[in-house]
Length: 199
Length: 199
DNA sequence: CCTTGTGAAAGCATTCACAGCC
DNA sequence: GGCTGTGAATGCTTTCACAAGG
Image (cartoon, rainbow over all chains, first blue to last red; front, side, top):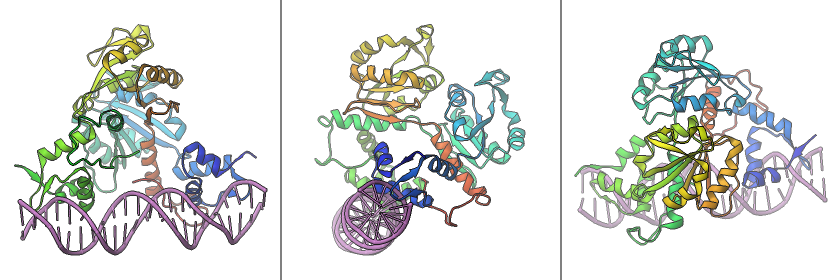
């Protein structure tokens, strides 16, 4: 039975081993004293807790470059996500195969969501279309939305929205880059450097 | 002079106004008691602190769907990022225009990085190519890397890497979704629900 | 007045350190 | 002996609450 210790896992993840043990303890008592954690059992327990063992049908709306990239992204299938349909407003795209799936017209949204019990929608449309698509998804029964469009969506209570801004990570890099090199010619108001911004 | 109070900003951002004021205070004392913050001045100070007022040339390596989506992403230019070049190993792609820029061959990497003083590289290649591209970028002088490939990169000290996993946000939505609906048939080890996972 | 800026208090998260168990 | 699980201690973040100041 292959096992792993909290010390090994912590070193691999770059965190403190006590924190890792305490975090695991919230999920239950899955280790063996003097031995460590049974790898297979641990993987299963964490997967189940995170919902990776369930099947999550999703629809992707807006099949431009980003929508196509998401449809092709290998990480989805391995984590329980199943692309139920690709939708786009452009009738010229209808029927074209992207990542092995035919693009379908946005007017099929309601029936696809209902037929596949879709509860999660991914929006990769231009900003201008995002709110309307959101409203239709919500009306059709979707209760979680992942928004890649650069706009803030309003949704009723009970619906979760997460917004992904592809430039935020770049901004964090630039922030650190500025610190590495620049410090000099930048007019700092009162000689003191604040301690803000994430790792 | 248009102003805004910490109370208004906090409500808009969904945070506590005292926290917002304390955060701002680390950047300096830019408000006026009894009045609030001068909007234009505040925007400038925050932009400067985050490095948005500087010009950041970046190269994007790997011009598939994701690379093309990034090249087209409007949010970059407005935040000081300038795409210095698009690079791909596929010679068939060379010269094709993406987002108004010609795709250039990966062998031009070194000269482009040097000529444009590029310090930030974006990797949108398949996983298999990512480490080699990273090594070349670092050797050419790049000190910050944004990695969209599903692989962990190793870099020397002094080089920053940030990894973006497009499925993590979906996973967080699925986690909440599981809570909303499921709770019932899931075998919870000891009757108690842990309090893990972000907002 | 009204709203900022900030000490002090309260609330969380991380780490230490060791009893408990295999 | 070795490693987990966890109270207690530490350190950090957020909020309270109010003096300072336009």
